[in-house]
Structure formats: C-alpha cells, structure tokens
Image (cartoon, rainbow, N blue to C red; front, side, top):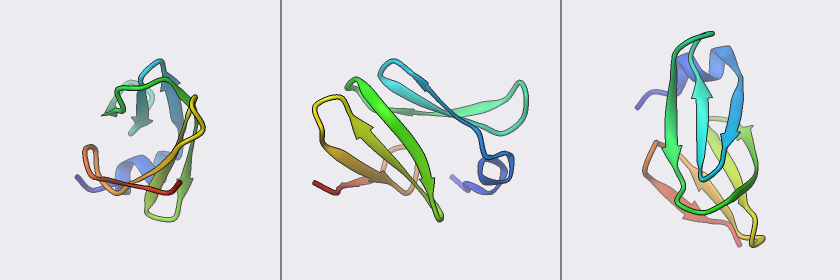
Length: 69
C-alpha cells in the first residue's frame, strides 16, 4: 500500500486493536494490530505503534512491521 494519501491527510486514529489511517474525512485504511494500542504516530514514511504492553512496532505497510523493542 502507498502511504501517500494517508500521509497527506495526516490523521491517525486508534480504534482498540487497530489503527486507522485516514485518507480523507470518510475514507481510511486500517492496520490490524491484534493487541491493545496505546499510541500511534507517523515517523517519516512509516507508522510507529506503541502497544499497551510497552512494545513498539514500526509498520511500513498494513501488514509488514518490525519490532523496535
């Protein structure tokens, strides 16, 4: 997935165990995290998600991520 539309709009919404990346007022793509999300932020061309258990993930697509800690 290209993050361009989501990055341009810039809005991330935490929705329980998923993160919504807004493309417009009514359209979004969702990252299905599968664990409770504490925080999510843009970091360049990726999304960094902090889980409630303290772990962090760096998402480069809707399903590809690497553990930060």
